[in-house]
Structure formats: structure tokens, C-alpha cells
Length: 308
Figure 1 (cartoon, helix red, strand yellow):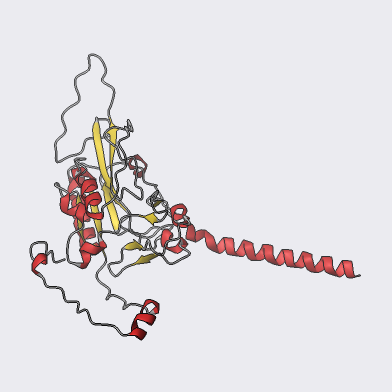
Figure 2 (figure 1 turned 90 degrees about the horizontal axis):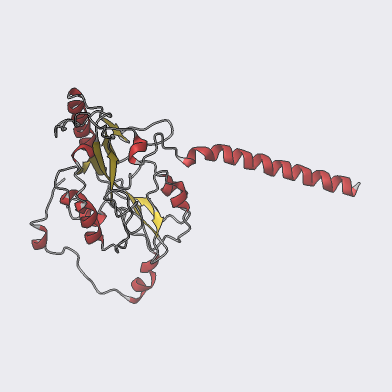
């Protein structure tokens, strides 16, 4: 994808403002806009083995999207002062401390090479920058009753806050706890994958600010190829690395924002087997229809016997 940070300022605006007549002003709000031309799906590939926990992604995300602060409360959970993803924090750096107890008289734990992650019996510090997964079949979009959640031309899941009614159905539907309702406007908010920057050919703010390339942005197919090559390289070095969310499962679709992990998903706060609630609806519809027919039959029987 073309990146135009340096030349964007010199690009003249191509929009021509023309005076509108009375009838045009009257009916314009009721007209549908032109649907954007579909683009290759884009997303994030997060390599947790090179994340240093600097939180540059958190800061860049808040600065670009003008998100309010989370407060200055001390969580006591390592260096994690954000706590979780929320309507005010669209990026969240997780710190997972895995330290073995030092036994008196035992030799100190060996130092870890930067190229190879330590085995589970050694002390280590796992870090991961979490974000919306931008699922190919997003439960939040399927649960939204107002059509506020859409898939844009880049195949990113996008919430239109002006259409959101704050019902919180999307919050209950998401198996990753990504979406919450904002305390200042009552609407649901989450990562937009910097839709405004993508429209101008720019890299999302978090990926642009990441100093170690832990967060990588691009077309999904390109990212998957790059991630699989990285996994092969790590496994050849003896690291138990794998990808999470790059392929669909029986219960969930693939994710356009996926991760390279070196421990179980639960260690990173991710569900081992995410489940789309939509899969339950067939049974729910069937049970509802049966209950309705049974109720109608009982009502008919009651009317017949009462009349008799």
C-alpha cells in the first residue's frame, strides 16, 4: 500500500464545492451516498516476540483519534496502567510476567537470547499489544440492530457512532471483550483501523509509531505470508511459536488482525476457541417456533373446551 506522509500536505483538494438549489438541499439528507470501491482487505499482524512494551502504540492511537485519558489509577498489574480495551483505549499493551521462584543455593537462571524465546521453565516477560480483531464474520456486526456496525471497503469492522443507539448488543456478542460503551456519549467505540488515514494512503498510527515492527500493517494476504515465514524461522530455532486467528475454525471466522504467540491463548487473555454466538441462532429460532406452536395449540384447545 502506498504511503504518502511526506507528499500528502502538498496534494490539492479535489472536491469542488458547488452552490446547491433548494430542492437539492431538501432531499440531500435522504439520499444514499456512493458506495466506495472495494479495496484489498487490510489488517494487523502483531508479532509478540519483538514487543518491548513501550506503549508507543497506545499513545499514538490516543493522540491521533483524540481519545480521552483513562485516569491515573495504579492497577498493580505489572506496568499495565490501562487495564483493558475500552471505548477510550483502542490499543492495550498487556504485560504477562512468568517468573520462576529463585531457590536458595541454585544457580541463577540463564540469560535469554534476543532471537530465541525461553522455554516455559525459564523466567520470561511476555508482552502483547491488543486491539480489535476485525473479524471476517464479526459477531458485533451481526448483533447490531441499527446497522451502525459495517464492513468498510478495506474489509475492516467500523462503528458509525452517529447511528449507534447504545444498546450494548455488540458488547455482549464480542468474544474478545473489545467493545465497550463510552462514558461521555453512551455510544460503542473501538479501533477503526485508522480508516481516515487509510483513505489517504497512510499507515495506521499505532503501526507507524511501533519502534520494533511488532505491529505490522498491510494487506491481509501479504501479512499472513510474512507471519508464516516468521513462525517457520522461530520454530527452526526451537521456539514454540504459532499464529492465532489467521485461519478460520469450526466455530469462528478468520481475523484480519491476528497474532504470533509463544504460549497458550489464555495466557494472553484470549479465548482458546472463540465461538460466534450467531451459530446458536438456528436452535434458538427452532425452539422459539416450537414454543409458539405449542402455545397456539394450547390456546386453541382451551377455546374449544370452553366453547363446548
